[in-house]
Image (cartoon, rainbow, N blue to C red):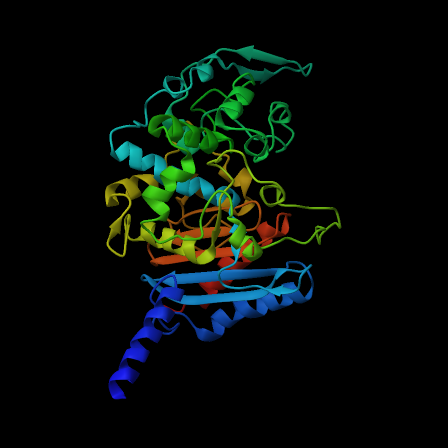
Length: 417
């Protein structure tokens, strides 16, 4: 009987351990105040009660161990389904970091040099002109002063842009972030944007853009595989990210977090396009899905210098290069134009990087790297504090930016050592 009890305990321990994305610790052992972390629960209780967000999942790791992992509210208000910890979220631009890691694996293989020309892979980019707005509103088209490099795709200095952002006349010519992937395959996307003008000379301005989508297309060109297959083999499978993909399988669709039908700020209709209609291609900039737990493991891999549970994804040197600022003083830094609390940040190879203490609207340390998703997800990692935080909400409106800031304020406010 005693032997059976020990066996049962071992099985239970294995099941519980498997259910958690990382080994578990207590807030006190990790240097957090339990009362401080309780403010996260109280915050979401207020927001959910006010019907500003359906629900949320948040995970915090420090020193490689899980400190806080909670689900709040509803997965889907229409069905009344409670939010589970393994809810699947549309990750939007948090896809960019994973795509960048997949591309850097090719760089480590000697197959994708950062200073190779984009036109070596897709010749149409060599013919793109730069649009210069004139006083009469006409766009003057001028040649590129230098080619677009793969390096430019990683750091958003390609001159490309996104449609529907700001009042830039060239932005109005571009499609929305997920539109090309919903409408067609990778080559159709390339054929759609290469006839358009660039918003800036390559290498001169950080302009948030389709750069990472193009980087994903380059990964496909180099490997001869779809981006999802590359990321599955090189990132998702080794890290045990079993719920991360570009299209959610039918058996898992009931776990997808759904936004309110109307934006709680203005009452206008809102949606998450990649949920409403499946993508036809694996867009590296905005189209993946995954759980908070999966992404926490991905973030911890980066924090560990490219390795988790004995599985190496990148070398420590590559991760250090990735998470360093790659915007030179000559490059116009527009990172804070994307997210207002990003003052004091530069940009590395797929992640924003904090370069200065202070300036930002949220606490943190130089070396922090981060990026978030337009449908309500967030990720940041602070190497000095050995801290990794992942947040999932289905909030495609402007409230998502409010949540990013408040969560970071609460997390650092709960740290006592």
